Length: 489
Image (cartoon, rainbow, N blue to C red; front, side, top):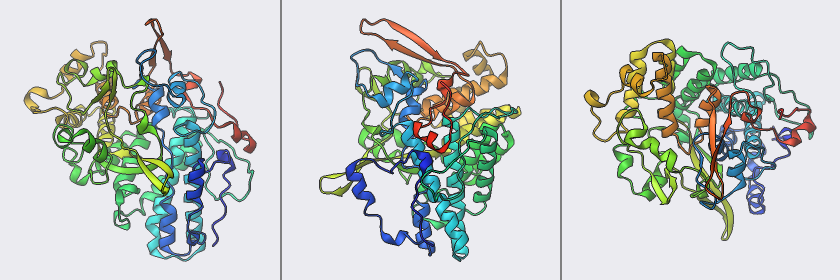
């Protein structure tokens, strides 16, 4: 079967990379990919079914994990400053929401072509893990799209607002009409793909499993997916299967031990590495995110307090590595940009980041336990999480309990809400600069407060409240060519 030219009109006629040097790289794609008639070629195609851009810059800037450090402090960049102001950034430049939209649909196109190749070629049982991977990849890309470009899923709600186009077949026309469907219908299709694909996955199918949806990574995805849906027991069930023997303590980030001993260079080189047990799925993307070392809007002195003894529920300084470039510019030093040379003097920057970790799965399970009213297990997960983030952790002295939660959050009246607040705050700090805070914000209807400091030093504040249309990123204007309506503004 011949690999059709992927037009992807719905992604605004996007190319994988727009720089001239990167077009040269695309021209080097081997011809043997044009016909998917072996399991080896199928595996190569499915490896491209992951988004080639990331969401880190625009979700982090939009969230309350960014602050204004003041006029004249740090560098300015539209990719950060415009999302920080909750305005639409026009164009598909690197690190933008449009670039991510395009990349997700390109990944979906690869998954669809792989699935069609399996249907039309007799590739045997060896193709089944890659069929599973393609289905889960398709589910993941659509899941990310619906949660960034449509209204959040409402537990027990109608969810009849516009979703995003669910593309489940290869494109054959330059301009092809699409419907957004609804959030409910989008979620239903994600669920079908995810559950069908998970049954076929195999970790042994890959040379470097961390760059693929292995069973562990798929369970982490399922835990996040069902968290959005409010299917609490399913969150528990899937999260539990993310690590061997339900042993999270020895499989989450060793913040207070191993990671703490790294030099700054070792930290940024190894943190998102495939050798780390806590990384369940790594994705390599075209990105310049790691270059934003001292942005005006980003990790500053206010956010740094989350790691101090007074700034978190443990009452202890957290051992997370923090590097200070210059006052008040901080970084967690989690990412290292690499550069792929296509010739001696040209190429493109790329970044590897963890799409799923054991740490997130653990805290998702803790939240599900809290919702189920199983407070002792929610507390156990919380304490397991903090036990590797406090140097010299003592269960007798440092363990979180309901009394400590009630004292730390006096305005919260119920144990369940206190547990959830504890979990969300723990995740906010741990995943700083990883873009994940935004998904808790939209899922839990949290108000975001951003400060602005003018040139005279006067500080004002703005709020992004639940229901504000700017909590939903705008679709590329070009999708109107395919009959897809944009989000209201």
